[in-house]
Image 1 (tube, rainbow, N blue to C red):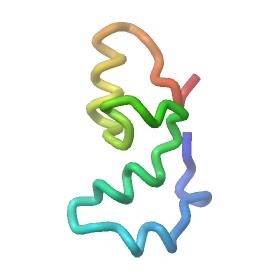
Image 2: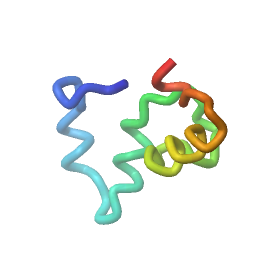
Image 3: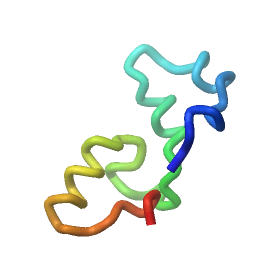
Length: 58
């Protein structure tokens, strides 16, 4: 999982107002084709409901 210390602040400053671009660019999940990529809360809830781990936390 990405630590705040490793987060690229240049990218964060370039985030759009919704944070969507920032979330997608900084998402540590290797599955970039996933519909939940960059949507951590949605992804974690999805996997929790299925008793599985999210890819970025394996």
